[in-house]
Amino acid sequence: MLSKSTIIRYAIWQAYKQRCVYTGKLIENFDDVEIDHIIPQDSNNEVIARKINLYELDSDFSINSFENLVLTFKLPNRLKSNKHFDESSERYFLSIAKSKKITIEHERLKLIKKLRREELLTIKTVIQEQNVNYLPKGEFKIKRIIDIRDDNYSTNFYSNSSLNVSINAHIPSKYNEIGSCVIEIKEIDTMISLTHVSIMELIKNKNRLGSLNYIFKGYSENNTKSFIIIGTNAVHLLNEVFEQLINLLEDFLNVYEVNYQIFETYIGSLNFKRSEDSDGYILESLNKFQWTKLLEYSKKYDLDNWSFKKYHFNYNENQIICLDKSFNNIVFWLIPGEIQLNSLSSFISGNINLEIIWRIPSIDDRIRIKSGNVWTAEQTYEWIMKIID
Image 1 (cartoon, one colour):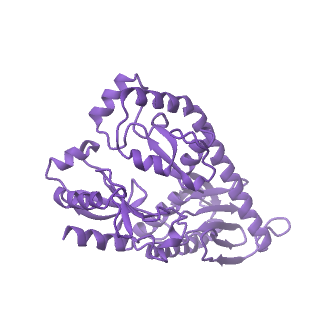
Image 2 (cartoon, helix red, strand yellow):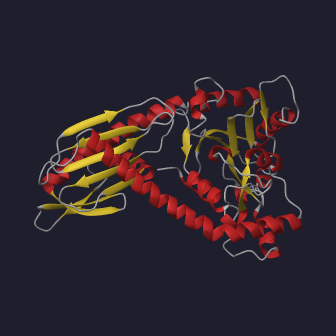
Image 3 (spheres, helix red, strand yellow):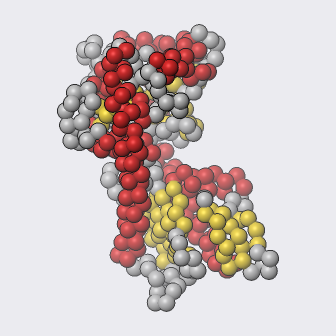
């Protein structure tokens, strides 16, 4: 399954008929798509409240609402950066975005349904190709397969079956850490599907609570069946089937965790904590003087100030985006973590520290880690320490 942000990006691309709002030109390649916040993302609560009142926006309006997002090419988005439009332009673009809201939501749901159908079909096709299917009249074949690939667009595949339970899944790779899982049980008509988030939560609970305790809920009255909850799925299973499920699930979660660690090793993030509310890792906690020093450096080597350096920055006062001189890719992207009132000014004027989050490179950019054109979390951390020293 694609990430939530990619699904929204695609839905907006379709809703705007693939045309950049600012240039009117057709964005033929989805990789060139960027989404701009009409009212800049770093606007504080006071500014947002004033503009909601000024433009008579919906009461549930927020910075990340569809009513504040428009389709654009990368370059116009980066040139606009965090600048505010004048009132008439802002009102104009907000009215366009509001008119697209229902269409975006329709495209988003349509894509999610399509992806789920395709995922199930893909898994079933692989099962058939590798002969891990039903025996006549019921039981599964006992077979375990792990298919690991090492290219940018292939997914790692896992399959394991007992007589009554079968697990088939996409597992993390270096280039795509988002996997998914489908569990089929002989005595249940519907399949149990688990998203990457659900799987990672199971791994977290397994490591914290130990075997069995992370999904086991209780027995039926006569103790012949076990009642369990997996993700959002609740089922009753015969005890012998429950044991088969636990054995397969333990193996699957172990394989999934190992491959996720391979991904983290590749992007150099093993020594950093994953930020739960963003697609990134917390590299360091900086005070306002250190953060300002990083911003000043990025301003000095902004992409408008040509020099002999290989890398340049898209300076916008609130985040640090390092670009390859050819503009083909982002070398690294640093964003501030959550701060008081969600306002950078509350950090600059106070004495609190700010968590610096390194955004995980896009799937298309991750292969460039090998050549050094995209930096790992570790490389970016070393750069931070060098600049603030």
